[in-house]
Image 1: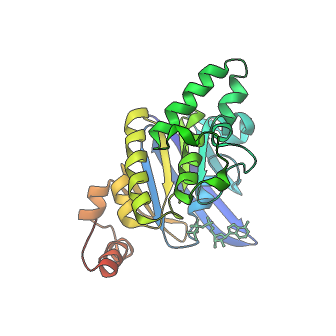
Image 2: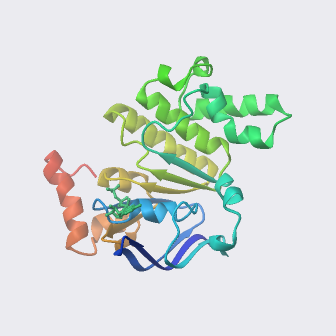
Length: 251
Ligand SMILES: Nc1ncnc2c1ncn2[C@@H]1O[C@H](COP(=O)(O)OP(=O)(O)OP(=O)(O)O)[C@@H](O)[C@H]1O
């Protein structure tokens, strides 16, 4: 399979401090890549390089073989869904208007088509249809998160970037959202990059898991491989911390 995203020899500094050096990685089409690592190790930076929100100081970010430095970023961002933690909806727009924001840019004339697409995505993420005229302030945190995911998906992206999208919701909602996103991935084949702090979530969702520390790749492998053959002490600790926290291995 072809690499859909590639970071090539990336270097990134903030205020003179190196965050990434010689960072190279390829993600194949249709993968569900989960990214986990210590706080501040560069996960968000890595993700935001894919839609050009952050530029590397050196190296190249390639999407489908094309350097994004030579790409129209507005166009690129329309083909990349972006879902982050917390309140990111347009507060003055209803659920329907939020979800249909990008499809409306394309389908201005065919309102019915967009309406149907909104209903379909609401159903897929588990929102009842009677919520379509509500405003974000009239929804729970979990419902807002679902609208955010539906909005990211309604643009029919080929790539979906998710930065701790379930970080702010309770455990039950989180479990439901995990199941839904896994099914969406299986049904649509969209390539997903998903940042999380939860190793159980990383291993449950990922078809590949990337473990980072200080901008360096500790392991990049299938969840089975990570469970059975942690590459080093850092990965082992990550697995064991979870065990310490919960008294037993829940992964
Ligand atoms: N705009 C910025 N200016 C200065 N430093 C920054 C900037 N953005 C990020 N950093 C620093 O770069 C490092 C990597 O940040 P990044 O957000 O990529 O980490 P992360 O792995 O996503 O962290 P977390 O898990 O805590 O969200 C951190 O030490 C952060 O403080």
